[in-house]
Every structure is written in C-alpha cells, then in structure tokens.
Image (tube, rainbow, N blue to C red):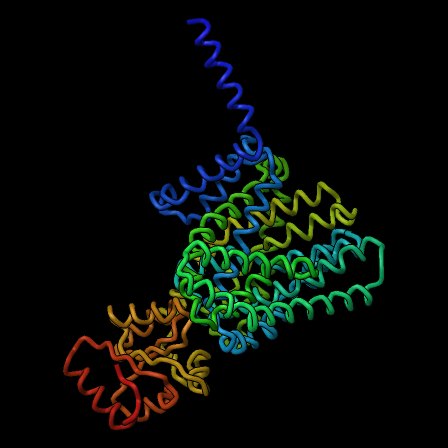
Length: 519
C-alpha cells in the first residue's frame, strides 16, 4: 500500500511539473473562457465584463495562476487580428471608400484634438514634453476590439453612429504608425523627418504587397483549394492569409490588425467570403475572449485601493474629455445629438494600442514605470466601463428622442440626406413590423445600405432611437417616393402585414417605377 501511494504521489508530482508553465496557463485560460459566457448570460451581464473579471481573478494582480504572460498576450493579440479580419470581410472596397468622410474627417479630427487636449492636461501636472506626446497620442486611441464587438453584438454596425465609430477607429489604426515611429525619437535617437519618411515608404510597400497578393494570388489560390474540396486545405489557406498579411504589415512598421483588416476587405470581393467567414468564426471568438482576459490582467486592485482618488480622477477625466470631443465633432459632421452622444460614449475608453505605446515608452525611459502601471490600470478600467456606458448612451438617446418632437423630416436628418443624395444602390424596406425588423437586421448584419419607411410614427421614432435609418412616410404617395430617392434603389421590399395596404403600396410603386424590382 505504501509503495502504491508513493507511486501515485510521484506520478502526480511528475504531472504537475510537466504541465507547469505555458501548458497550465493555456488550460486555465481555456477553462476561464469557456465558463465566462454562460455565467455572464445567467447574470445578464456583458460577456466582455465577465472576461475582464476572469482576468482580474487569475492574473498576476489576482491569484497569480498565470505564469507565462508573454504566451498569453501573443494568443490574445491573434484574437484582435482575426476579429479585424472578419470586420474586413464584411466590408467591400466600395463600402470602405464611402466611409472616407468618417475616416479622414471625423477620425482625423477626433484623434488630433483629443491628443492635444490630453497633452495640455498632462502639461498642467508638469510632465516633460516627450511624455506628453506619448500620453496624448496613446490615450486618444480607443479600443477597436471592445467597440466593434459591442456594435456587432447589438447589430449596430450599420447605424449612423456605428459607421461613424467604425470610421474613427480605422483612422486610429493608421495613427498608431507615426506614434510608434516617433516614440523612439522622443527618447533622443534619430531624426523625425527621416523616420517618418521611412515609415511612409514602408506603409506604401505594405499596401502594395497586400493589394498584389489580394488581386493576383488569393483568387487563383482559393480556386485551386476549393476545387480540391478539402475543408482542411481551405482552412489552412485562410489562416495563412490572415497571418501572412498581419505579419507583413507588422514587419514593415504598421499595426498587424491593419494588415488583417485590409486582407479581409480584399477577400470580401471574392466568391469565397462566406466560407472564409464561417471558418474563422470559432478561432476569432475564443481568441478575442482571451484578449479581454489579458486586459483584466492589467487591473491592479491593490494599486486602485492605494491610489483611489488618482485612479478615479484619471478614469473620469479620460472618458469625459474623449466623450465631449467626440460628441462635439460628431455633431459637426452631421450626426443627430442622440447618435453623437452614443458615438462619444462608445469611443470614450482607452485602446489596446495604448498598452503597446506605453510599454515601448517605459522601456525607452520616457515614462516612469510607476506612472506606466497607473496609466495601464486606468486604461483597463475605461475599457471595463465601455459596455455600461454603451447601454447608458442607448437609454439616453431614447429619452432624448421621446422628449423631442418628431422632427426627422427628410431635409433635417443626416441619414436621410445621405440616402437622398446617394447615387449608388440601396434597399428600401417598406414597413418596420416583425418581418421588416428581421429584413433590416439581415441587411444590417451584411452592412448593406438600406432605408426603412414606416407609416406608424411611433414605430419610426422607436427605430430612430436605435440609430436605424427608418423614417415616417406613406409609400403610396409619389412625392414621398421621390423624397426617399427610390429611383436609385436596387430593390424595394414590402413587409406590410395588411394585404390591402400591401396591394395599395405595390400598385402605387409599380405605377411610379414600372421596371423596379419589388419584393
């Protein structure tokens, strides 16, 4: 018996030694990721908050169950890469070009003004100039992973504030490049002009390489693999595409997420996009969950408790400044106040690239280690508050709409103006009842431009509260059809429940548009 007990004890000790390190870290992370979603659903909380809580619990500032942080962070980074790749697949090149106002107008303004204001605030506290540049630029960035996941979960990517937020995040991904280039120079090495020139050349090489691979190599390669009818080979090519494009841009000085996103955009133009999207979904989901867990690692409860007034002031200040600036700029770029406030609250957090920028600045001696830890904890907390603020923004927008008069006439609403002035195809959905909502939701998921027309003002107001392009109008009137620019619609989908009203609408539409596709 003693010999058997000794053998069992030795076997357990050997097992413990064998799985220690990266192996045990992987098992713990997978267990945490698997448990978070069902537990969060039972508690009626956002899964993102669950992942953050799990990270706080098992991370180095909690129970310390994770030993190899580098391995964990690498896996988590892949989660962001796959997520941005999926976002790229859901966007066409034409759709991306149509967002140039949000990317280079709203996005540029938001990043520049926010960085300057935050730097000025830092100057009041006596921080040196090089630290101000890093902190201002790093804190001006928002989290693509958090924001896009929230928009996707709520089917709000195609709403006006969803598109504006997405465009702003795309510009921020571009802004990471000069920020990372300038940071080593701020430590006292090299010329700014030369470094930026080199970065511009590398960016050109990255875009040229991705465009060449997408247009010349990907289609033939996918054709060969699809012809073989091998699911494993198809999945292998997809993984090769995502990782090679992200490594290409990362190696040339751009963010790896930008490379993955552009690769997705190029694949969106091919006939293989839906199979690719289905193949990467399982990888994207679990790896993105790991990313949120690693963000939880940075939340140091002891640091928060010992410096609560400072941390609370930093978190409140960062989110307040970013909300006010983004909301004001959104209004200037034509968003309604309810949409602008939702966009402002949604982009009020710090971003994942702040971890990269601040870490680099700490290693170069620009930021003090204690200040860096304080900033990373504060950024993590702003991320943790994002789901709460997103819900609050939606409720606030609804209350504002309910208290205001029904003034969403076609000459006053930015969504309507875009539809009216659109020279490209869109889909008109007549009726926003049960079926109409499903149709609009399907169009929303595929980021297809649409306009909803509802003759019940209460339903129209409810849809506008959600930021959806749905308006009040009687489709049987020719002047209403003209106001909605239905001559440029690709199709008109009628979802009215009443058969008499449906017939009346079809007769009126067929009379005005005899060649239009009506469903």
